[in-house]
Length: 240
Image 1 (cartoon, rainbow, N blue to C red):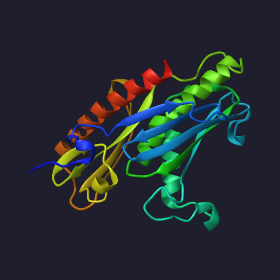
Image 2 (image 1 turned 30 degrees about the horizontal axis):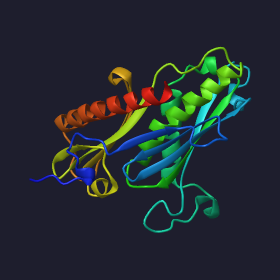
Image 3 (image 1 turned 90 degrees about the vertical axis):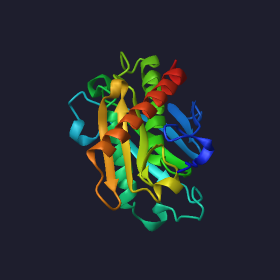
C-alpha cells in the first residue's frame, strides 16, 4: 500500500514543527507552537499566591487552561464562555496539560507561586493537546527563569523536560503525529507524554473499534519515543 501523508512524510516522521519562544511580550513566559497546520499560543502567568489547599505548605502550583478560538477549525465554533460552561473535552485536556507540566517541576522550589499556562488554539489540524504540552513546557521554563532573575525563588523548579506526541493505527499501519484527517479515521489513537530517556508521564489510548494488541501498543510507544526525542531536542535548543 502506498502511504500518502501530509508534508510528504513517512510513518516515522513528525510534521514540520516550530517552537517560537517569547511570542507574547506581556507574559512571563510564552511559546508559539506550529505543528504542521496546527498552531497553539502558550503563555505562562505568575501569581504570588497558591490555592487554599496549599497555603502554609511552602509548595507552589501549576495549572493550565485550554481553549480553541472560534475559527480554529473549518467552521466557526461558539465560544465556550458564551455557553456558560466548558465542554468535558476542554476540561479533560487542560487537566492533562496541568498534570504533565507539574511532573516537570519540584513544587517546593516554586515556593508560594502559582503559574497558569494558557493554551489557545489558533488553528487546529490534530494534535492540539500534545502541542500544548510541548509548547507549554517552554512557556513554563521561561516563567521559572523570570522568577529566578527577579530573586523571587533561589533556583528554577524545573527538574525534567516534558514533551508529548500523538500516535495511531490507520489502515493497519502505526503512524507518528497524526493530523486531523488521519485521526478522524484512525482505528487506534493515542497520546504519549514522555520525558528524557523515555520516562513515561502519561499515556492515553483508545481503540475506535477492535481492541489493539500489545504489539501494536509497543510499536506506537517506540514511535512516540522517537518523536518526543526530536521534540525534546528542539526544546533544549530554544531554551539555551
